[in-house]
Amino acid sequence: MDMDYRAVRTEGYKLIHWIQHPDEEEMYDLRSDPYEMQNLVDDGEAQGVLKALRAELAVLAVEALGLPAVR
Image 1 (cartoon, rainbow, N blue to C red):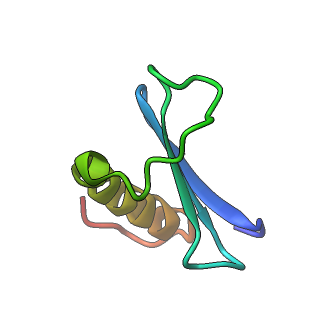
Image 2 (cartoon, helix red, strand yellow):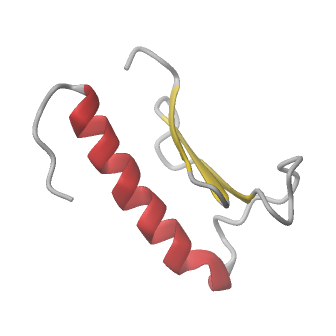
């Protein structure tokens, strides 16, 4: 919890949320972009995945604090 970012990774995607810069995020399709060169946060077609990853990250952050999270 004492890091500059929070991140969640699934089999296909990675989302990074920067704590010091809350308006900055990075999301990558790890299957088609394994070197994480193309940030998909502003890609209209990726918004569904982005929403799901943000929700999962929120749950993980709550659980990391030792609080019960609703999934």
